[in-house]
Length: 409
Picture 1 (cartoon, rainbow, N blue to C red):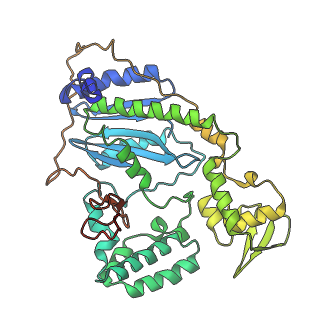
Picture 2: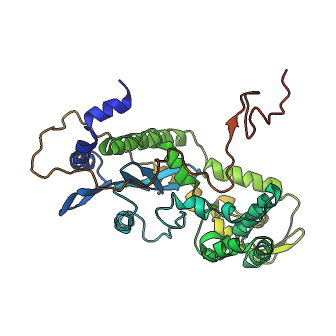
Picture 3: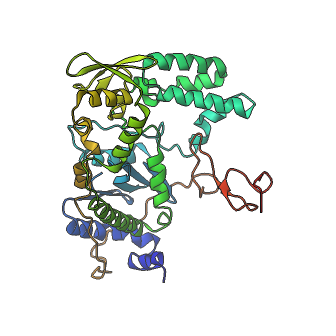
């Protein structure tokens, strides 16, 4: 018997699975002290219910007859870290408000949180309509790709001066429809130059898409089975991460070490001039000022990414101080260990009662089915290249049998 079928037998069919949530919340809370599991429903309409499992840490995947909201972050080694998820009846204001209020209760108030998400809720259908590609009126593929690259450079530009220079070129080459599209995007929401928070280098919603892919096989399960299946995946993931960490004998995570090594190889020819104990001038084809005491550089990348930029790396090296002391705690192995120090424990169902103890039976939420055939595959992100396997040469790439140019032996 398959795992999914076995879970279905344990937690009933579609309707009874919602009523099982009440038992599951109590059982999971008892088995996982320190976790926050909550359930809410309208007493006047007991069929409208919300459920969430909140653990330690962050986007949105759709599910038939309801929505699965999730928040997915990244740990110090760039691994996905699921903070919380919730089953709601739809992406309404009330559902989002309830979900975010629960999230607020478990986040650290002293630390600024940056949300990387789509422009607004309920955007699955609108994604195709608001994608920049659809607004570009140029006909040639080369021109369109150039404009997309230029737009990306605008988004990643660290200073306002560089952004304005690139943005003027972009607007001069695109049509009026693109200008209207850009007017609806506040600069602080899509470009580094105006962003006031800390992105840690994250500029897209890949974490959300990765979470959706991670639970691809579980999304069709009934509600209680779905929640339990995700719990099991998280339980195993936490255990694996602790095993990986036990093999490390370092201060910072491997991701940070590799990034520092790449930076070292790129800056060997730079000239460093000392101004004071903390302030340095870095010279190559241009000059920038670095203040290692304030962890900032005139290029602004250190402030945006919370990681020493190439100029900052040169200044720290010239100072003779320990480079690890200038890394954000986020990249330290100790923080990584803290993230996975708690275990997510099993929720045994062998003693679960099948007897209804009261007259109130929790029914499935009343959800409106979206128009058209349900989508089974996600909408690709801007600029994403779909890789396929060529039936002629057997290799993965962007070509097929008709366009294959591979020489066959």
